[in-house]
View 1: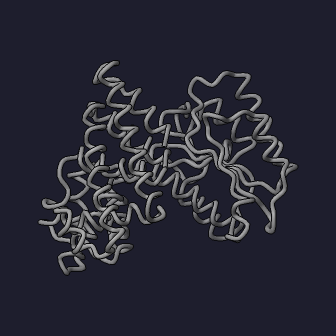
View 2 (view 1 turned 180 degrees about the vertical axis):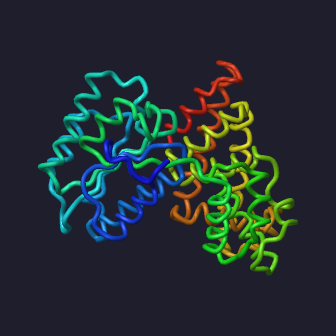
Length: 357
């Protein structure tokens, strides 16, 4: 896809990054396409660029659940003024246009169009893959994209090429203080798939494993030791998203699992098993924060202990931390009971579980 289509105001991810780097984001953005990880990453970049004063973040960072979105609610939010800074940021992550009634779309576009006068707002909407009719890009965009382009900047996120994915993986390893050759990155992608959400979780695991072994370079044997089947990769990423309360990331991983036709009962079972291990680590960590000591006390490998501690890092200590995990285990139990009633191949109980986090 070309970097720009002037007739419909569609830009690429690279164009968006340049804009954010050179100037304050403004107006409304629709982030759509195949690569969800980059959509959410860029949505966060826009948010950080707009809401640059942490002291006022609670007033100027507004998130609207797409399940609860109405044009009236959006207009109400747009009318309110920012506090302490020039603009406020509104994010709607995971909005589906598939099946949206024509009058609802008309009302939504009318609400977004108000931003031309209410320019103290920046709006970011992310759309899951296949949840909007794109037409035939770049030459013949759909009618809905043409209409949205009149009031929004449309940003298309294509699936990453193998070379781009390997380059990103190498940089992501560096973020954790380790290095990995192109061959290592290629092996990891071949083993765990192309989902950047899944790869991000696996890169973190591999990095902690290498560091726990006293190395700052990932080896081929590490991939065999740490990354097992795709199901293990996916459910670990899913569990991290559940514990973090990140519904968008959790739903994205579920879509990967659904695409691979992973049975819902297996998903729930693997997540529950990981949560029980995480609960053991959380309990012991209240007495010692040393990963080696926790590993010795629980019988869980030190690199996994490090991963669990990192996943729990944003949760307060003590009862709140344990409660978050126990709540997630209870959600798994409820989903398991529904699967036994509705059938082991029904994804609805898993979706309900993730919508409750």
